[in-house]
Length: 204
Image (cartoon, rainbow, N blue to C red; front, top):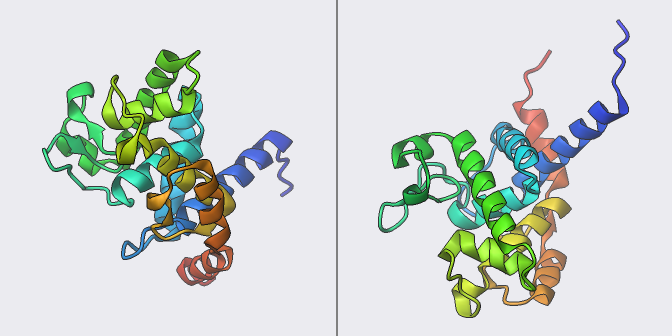
């Protein structure tokens, strides 16, 4: 039977596959990522990112930076929970719910980033403003380790877009030039993705 796929559908599928590959590529050292799990994260990031007008790669960068893709993680004070370390004091969901659902984690991260984007509109440091608010609130850090939070997120997002394994290299960035260097030093994981996918696919 002939299936007529529209150009829009094909484009969306290709974009989703690229995001899946990117998530697989930036898996954290010591935290193995399966293709299936990367695909589920890609779906959640795409759906919630699209609804909120947020780049799905940015949501993925937040998740990688916040939790290394460990779903049930909890912050030191017990109030930052789940894959995207959502602060339960500004969420309607409980820590238990957020730690059990990557879907809710991406949903809440997208909601927060939309709110911060709206609040930072017109700021000269727009990206730093909205991303650092995710990490340190309204009175966001502008210097030091916490001040560079936005650069770490953008680094992981860029690595995912490039399909490059940067290890923990993004955690050391302090400027935009560092991001480019981390990507150049990274290792492409596209072949690894295809190999892993062929192993996981059931034989016909």
